[in-house]
Image (cartoon, rainbow, N blue to C red; front, side, top):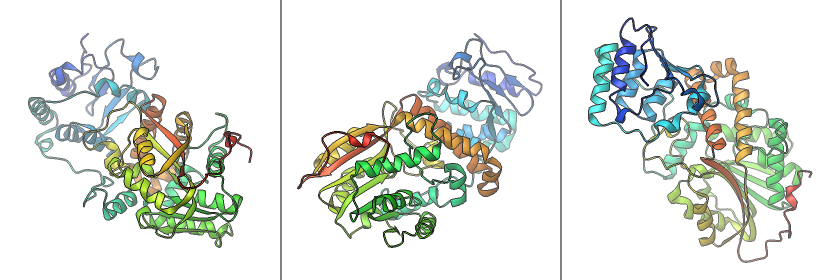
Length: 440
């Protein structure tokens, strides 16, 4: 079924239609979304394609606001080019979620050298010679340097993401300042209630007892450290690579009157040397470790735990989605050097490092609800977010969180809590899963 041009007054829609028809083995036909250009011309979606758009009654519309959007896509015909155009506000959508629901349609798209040449010439015809040059990239794009997985590069990657603005994260995450999957007893739970339930669930899985030493690897703004010290009487130490996180975490600890039992350091997990600890938690940090470093990561944790001590790893894993072959929107605009990998990699690493896996729980549906809650916060506080961090970051986070919610819903990725015991002594665990009850 062909796509007709509507109001192609300046020829943009007509030129784009002719060019798309010759690209990528005709994968753009039929067009599953409407394209609307800066000159008012449009390419409507083909009939019968709206059903794929997240159960919408109509296909979504992509708005190309400026010819520079085409330049980004022409010079980087992949996720990065599209991301640059989106983050810069050159591309928009009337229904972003419906548009994301169509992404599988183009997942295997590959453009030849001839395809790229056609794109370049078409862009020059509709936007002028300036589109032949690479446009400037958005200011928030990450460009980390140095040896991959080195301490220096990991610090730079983490700080790019977290040393943005504590106020920004408070507006998006809410008062709990917990940047990981919450635990919902019911879909009607508020985000704050669900995050408190998650913190308590971790403490109960670890069987925390007064006087024990707890290490929280990647402690963020200190929420787990504070909860464990206040409600379980442990001596809790948190480590983060973010100076801004550590500063606010220390303020929160002092405000809670917990300075004698809780502390936060700016350090990498590889730099911690004051073990043994009775228990170790790693919540939402595992994604920064990297697949090649899993054995070293688990061995480092093991070296800090007493025999029989418990380790809880809470992290996102890849289920059926493919490992990206190059740079992506996420690695350029959200988590530089972040990696997702199968749960089995962690399980093998635990076994080889002298751990016994004792419990595994998936929280995939919980993360959908968590992300929806963050998106509601972002929408409700949009004016304040824009004033605090600007439109580029607001657009990047909106795309990142909505895309992540879709990926969890579709089962492309998941999140697991794995409880493991270091060998060498009995772990003192109950026979049943007594932590399943949410009441503390």
